[in-house]
Length: 320
Image 1 (cartoon, rainbow, N blue to C red):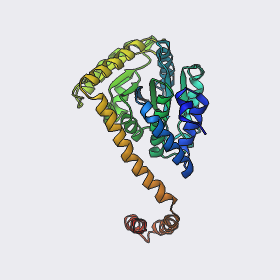
Image 2: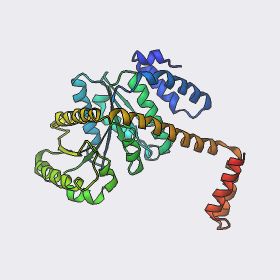
Image 3: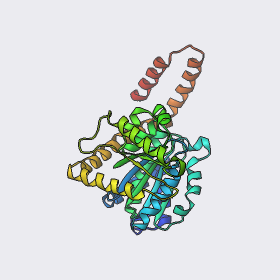
Image 4: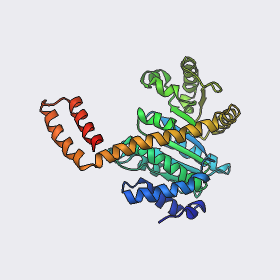
């Protein structure tokens, strides 16, 4: 069983075992994991937590590998985590990403962790928060949290990081139609990738279009969402991303937002842990499973309304 000391000493095998432990749904494993997290929590919180999302084909893996390597060259230790609720069905897009990020994966100052299987976004997000604590305690000072899914996963990730980045392609006109307004509203920066070769001029045009679009959104009191152009393949513009991150952190601390957001993250983690725990315990309840199966057939045969069936099950659970 991994110990807190082994993780604090940076033992990678112990870190991997600890993460596997927190991903387990067994009660005895959860108790051991919670004890380990309590021991390591005081040693966490010193990293920069960066959320990264992007549309399919934007080059997220290439960017993460390039930026990760760039940060390591500056003396940083980088952990890459993923929130991917689709991986159990798709065969594991993040595992493909890990293969594509082979250079970063083999760097001794980097650690790449695929999201746990299970298909439940709430559970995946919970484990990602816990994994983040373990990685910070193990000495990783930059945590890149990649969201592979779409929709709710972006909002889950934005609530567990310090800075949220949206990667986009140069074809702004097409993308603005397909991107949910809410995702742009929670972005701290928009990074237009593939600003190279024939698409370089297109990227600059897209930059001005995105700047016009985000000017209509609600902004943080101390920060206006910035738009950058980069080329992950040519490793151009990475220093601009680093500079932007440092500027954001400096202003966030100056305006007393950094520590407050970290406190809010812990409280949100507490709330979501209760909700996730209730859901898990309900699903494990044998009476619930029997009732659910009975109601499912009745609902399918239009003999019971879903609302009425749900009310009866809830009454049964909370009475018990």
